[in-house]
Length: 72
Image 1 (cartoon, one colour):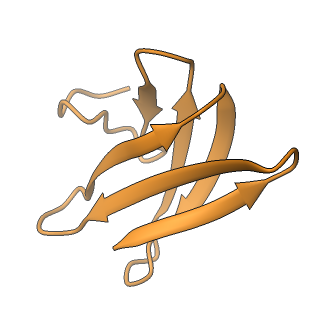
Image 2 (cartoon, rainbow, N blue to C red):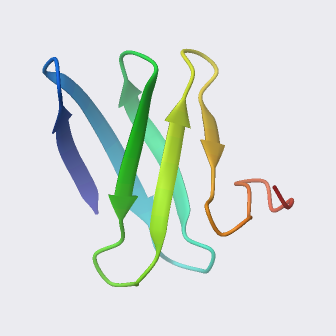
């Protein structure tokens, strides 16, 4: 599932949610500038906060899980 969201300043962020297991894995396809994004899964009552800081891109899972499986 690809979600395209627009933000103030015409900034476009593309996020790709892969929900084959929990916690949901996610990957940034494109992030042009540092931005705080808030997305929600279409099928699960879970909120994801993506924090992009140029390159590399850093992720923070609000439930306390980081993409590598360690706790925040």
